[in-house]
Length: 300
Image 1 (cartoon, rainbow, N blue to C red):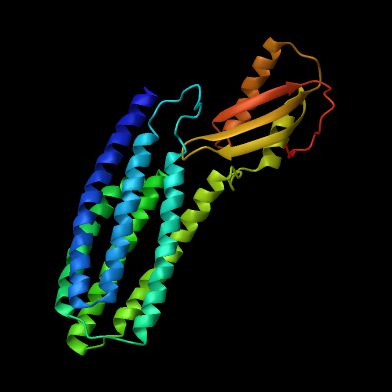
Image 2 (image 1 turned 180 degrees about the vertical axis):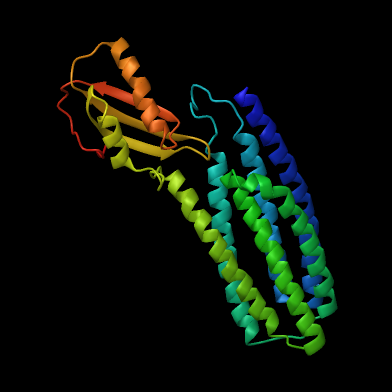
């Protein structure tokens, strides 16, 4: 039943992603042509950002499909990490694109050129409408999935960038302030770095198997140690596999040489204690007077 629900939700996400991809392809083509004709760097930078959206959305779409593949003997975790990798790639692309835009904006700022502002205004309005619709399609799924959040952030920042381009187009049309084009480009780029950094950091932590920040290992070891049959809990590893799975493996030293059936009963208590910390996959190695390192963290 749980698997069926997951695949259904995945299909909805995939469908919304596909709509967003088609919308952004149309916006990108229009903005590239318009940017070249009008001479607007901010419009071209917005087109470049839109193109990155198309690439990132395609990556997210493929990752979303791959993540649903079944596990096998060679791939015991399946492809559950595919969406985390997609989130990392998308976040990194945001930052790289932002650096390129800042460089171009600085060059253009000292050499401003006249710009066909009317075309800039209408294409900005088109981009706002298209990206706004994409943002609405992705908003719900972005709250529960890192891959969807990376796609959502691309779309949201692009919509905001298009609003900035629209404002710039209006200022150029009515006040001939052409340097505003470079200023807006730099502002868009800085915002890309701002939103991309958190996602890059979070996805990197998952890929590096870092312990989730909210998981207190010392507290967990102490709580499990309160069970009367247990001497201590040590050699703990906790990692996040994807958005939904947090794994823990640890050694548990017992006070007495208990039977397997007794261990199974105590294991239920251990799992109950650990589940309270949001950990849903638990693997315990039982020990009795084993001469190993009893530290909570042991380097393998």
